[in-house]
Length: 130
Image: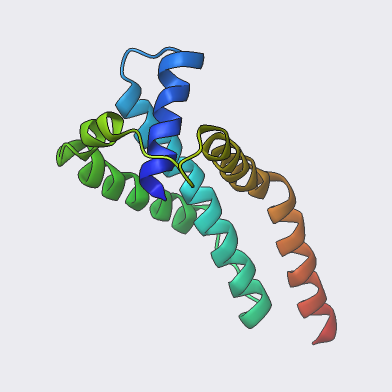
């Protein structure tokens, strides 16, 4: 799945918004998107299960760790060039792959907006019941 997302992020940064270093940009934006998703899910689970949350520093650390792992996994190993040559797709469909990639990006980006409010509501309800 990540290889397909990598490839379609790469196509975006070569066709739609041309970039001098598309692989670096893809690693950064894919890692940021994945970081938003992971942090959002972790914070929601932590709030629902333990009525706790963490501030921005652990979230930044998690995102930086994801960036480091993606850098080592894709760029340092040379896998990014193999992915671009292989042109992976979901369900062997270009349109389906684009749709899933856009949905992934919008879902992860939406955590910036509704995730904060949802977590705040959960934490306020926890404090109210005590």
